Image 1: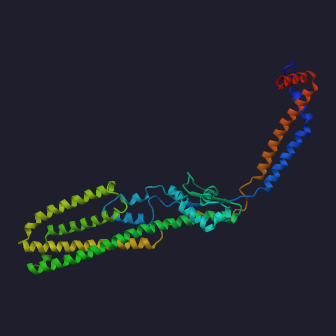
Image 2 (image 1 turned 30 degrees about the vertical axis):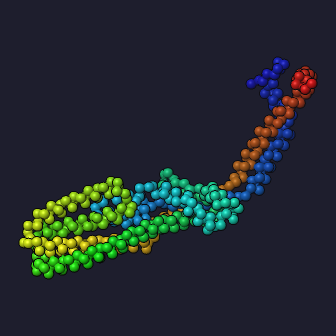
Image 3 (image 1 turned 135 degrees about the horizontal axis):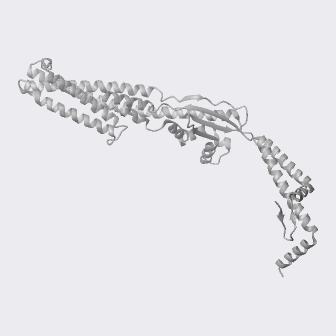
Length: 389
């Protein structure tokens, strides 16, 4: 393609190549200078090493000791869907959020003295630097959590990546332990109340038995009375489990509402059964003895259920939370991740060549412009037209 100039002359491809040939040493000089500059910069820049750790999130629903205990509560009380509620969040995103939390970052900053190492003016600057140097992502294909740490010291980069896993484990343990402690305190208070109620029920039964002079066990042989006792035990166990789950779920939760409906149905059935079975007792004194015996059995069943749940809470409190499953632990890298010296030199050489060609064309054009008398006359007229007079 030809470039037309104002005086009608044309500059062809051969002319352009001739102009570049006249300035070939300038092109080579600029390109060589840029290449050497890129090489020197790549050698001077501090090398950065990257170390990567991989962890596998716990299966959905395995949310720690508290979640496991909640699942046991659901199985024993008939709240079938409660076990999966603790794992409502995606565990990989939960892990990522925990490792990006201020608590974990501050712990890492204090542990490794990052403010001093990075010469950060404030804790916020150290957090920003930590977020920049440690990239945490979730691989879509496998679901694994990837922790990639960068630092000029390869050993420290690996240490920083592994420290994120350690702090994550500590947080999971702390959350699980706190949850188990809350349940333990709740069940311990319920045991004290139930023991007092049991002692009172036993006293009432002894007094009623002494007044009636009958053996209540013979009356309990009747099917209706046995059924009533079983219903009371189920109602008591369900009340305990609903009260315990209220520590984690609201009253508007569908599973809580379903359990409340089941409890209401059991109570209605018990009321109907007791009203029909009352005719089997000879007199009010015997009826009072039967009622006292029922209350005694109910309190015994209630105490037994709470003791079992207390043991579960104690076990959960003693053990650690969900262990972080490490696929790959970070190790010091042998090769730097940046800078890419070859790439830097290539980019610098390419940039130098472009600048050299542009400089050569401008310089050759300006030289030709100066050699043309007509162009010089037009240039002088242009300068005079804009001169301040």
